[in-house]
Length: 177
Length: 342
Image 1 (cartoon, chains in turn green, yellow):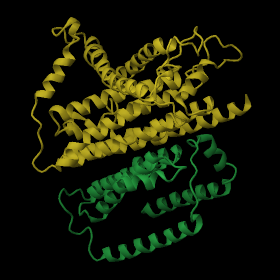
Image 2 (image 1 turned 90 degrees about the horizontal axis):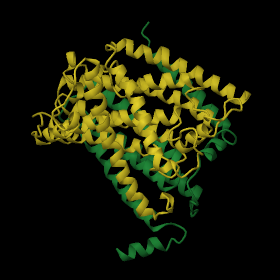
Image 3 (image 1 turned 60 degrees about the vertical axis):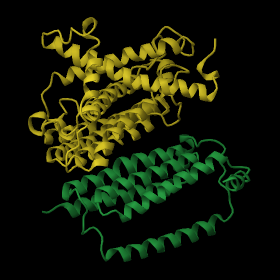
Image 4 (image 1 turned 90 degrees about the vertical axis):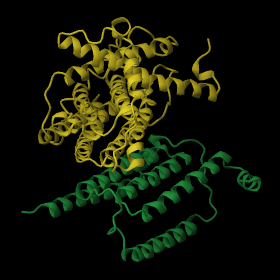
């Protein structure tokens, strides 16, 4: 334990408490993420997913990005998971374990997840290598707003148009006549 | 004189934890006694509780004692953990919501840059608790109540947030203290005697906010999720004793917190005209001013609750999507144009 603490505090430009809480939250997220894929009850899986996403929001707060953290709660917990649960409960709200939930699709899912992990790890390690995240103070909302509406205005508008196209597409698909 | 800001971090944090508990529990108690016991009684030409304590004011403690004595019942087929955890998720959302409400220049829980955005985010977490309660009860009426509540809460979250955007544009900040100060130090065409409470310029936003708030609180006329004549009490059907009490406290405390947020956004928060806005006096009278404004706004909520009949499910959805959201969008555009023009 003391060796661990020494290694953590050797990171002189980071806070000890921050690193310890990063580990605690990361552990909670990993356990919850494993539960999401191993539980055979769809509603339980969605509720475990809430914990994973809340952990991600907590990690953003540790990095001083409060705006991103709150957006994570608003969009993913408040909207995406609620829509998951809403859909599951409208269609099949069986109480016990759902035998049809998994099956042979599990292998394919594991392969895809492994590939995704590999690609993202390589990309992140290749890009940032030994760089440190510098956290002087919490990021202000005005900083986020300024960068979205000046530096990143083109990607932002492109994403908006993409979302609009997806919305119109979903209406077209859902219409029967 | 020592101000709250000069205390050590742990001292001010302990004070704020106590303050948060008081804000949630006392506010819920005040609203239940003043409005649910007395206001509705007077509207129906009766006295309400009169036996326990002066004017029946200790009736609340008697009710809490009654709930605490009741047996903690689980339905046999219920999902025990989800069923047991649901009231805590709902109450957690209320406690997270109360931290953004300021009570004075130094009497705040958190002075975050995000303010009202944080409030809107954490208020949406309660939907998860309601769905957990509805599904975990293993009861079709509970499930239908939970689904109705979710559909309603999703539909009315949009006009609620869009109504807030007008205020944020006018104040130029999402910080709750900043919104209070923008109103306290504002001027109406150069006349600054009463500041510029946003009820004068954002009255459209206030109307949309109050209607959407009524629906978010699932109070009549938006009480389709707990419609007692068709769903018993919706997602709360299987709950009794302590867990029902938690839902009950959550319901009324959230009504109080949303009233407080409306008071901050549109009525000037802890500020009253006539005293300088950075005066230390507001740390003492500010919370009392807030309480007065909360009681006033929540009076409007309960007045509507006891006056109007229930909306049908389709009328309720149509009101949100075809009426409130377009009005709120027009309000945002008009506010933006006027903000640039003046």
